[in-house]
Image (cartoon, rainbow over all chains, first blue to last red):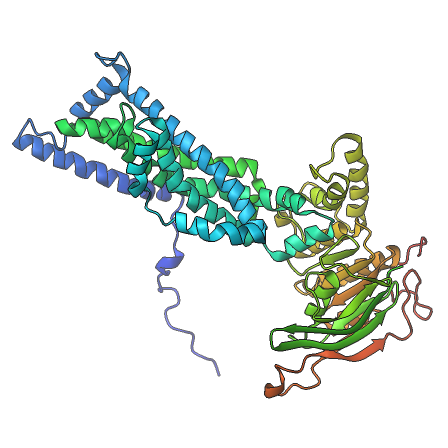
Length: 285
Length: 262
């Protein structure tokens, strides 16, 4: 006896979860949401400008281009600086200092907490508690104690970012398989050698990843600090021109900050793959 | 010499008794396979030999000396997983122990010392059949090759005792048979005692000189907590296997014996 075949096998459409875009389609799909936002902005801008040519809320392309030109390529009449670049320089210097200090702290404390049970007992609850303090609530204290200069802004970034990085790295070090540590011990490794050659190299890729994840918060704290007290910086400029409703400056600045952050994020990941090729091979295992 | 002597060993986790009154004498150059049902404490026993865990009572002697409370270079180990370092290449993995031993502070070797160690490591890599893979990372190796690498990495330290915790359990049968041949060869050549935990009876009887079974003599649910497992069978393979010697009756049974012998 022949069993009937299951009906219309051919006509059955492929499940949605199993159909994947090709390379071109993927690029098009990736660009689509950006395009939608840009078009929506343009439409809104044109509509508002048609109603009131002096509208400042959604400036048109010409106004935006004019503002970008003014900020980036024409020296400021008062100081002689090219404002966009001097602001970028000031902000990136603060950001780099804050993230650099945070990275050093995270690497040191994360490693020690992850490896040494005594250090873990002493520091882990403390770091856990510190990471729960809302950093912006500390900003007035920082301004009072450290003054309104660079130190307090860098300190805010460090306080906001470092504790989470420390915890992340400590957890990464702790989650290394016990077998690996034991194996190193049977190869005559001391605690120092295990830290230096087993744990440290294996948490460095995660250090880069955790740094990438903290880029957003770091920018947040930077701009908050610059908004309150500064005389230069991307955040300072945005909050300064807000008084004149200068959306034509604010929009390009926001886009520029986003671009910088996205680029840093991308470059850090490239760096990880270039320096620790094995970490990419281990992915998905 | 590398004789293990275990006397009245107990292991308890709180109220739970895992092993009770385990005593065994393991002679130098023996190859002991530990078998038994899951959860009978044979891996716990191996971890105590390794120094990863400390017994509750009793003593373990290696050549008459009590074992230190932590793992050391006299006892090599190969686990089922995570036995090699993912951030080091094959060559780096095999050289690793030697580098740690020779350079206590930097844990790295340079120049002529490095070349000597590298040569030894390359010989070891060749001995386990991994020539040509020196610059690969473990993630680029198959499961069988990773275990070969783990063996090379452990054996370059010339341990007195090699401890194997289900090392070949995740390999498919063909690869496993190949690595059994390698294992016999290494056991014949290196002056070490081997203790291996395995689920595979066939593997136990293929490789070992002695098969030791762990079991719970009392295994009713209400007895499980307060009665641990102990050694219930201790079978010597017949005709006997001896390290460095081909079997008298079937010369090919015990794998390739190099002329160096013991």
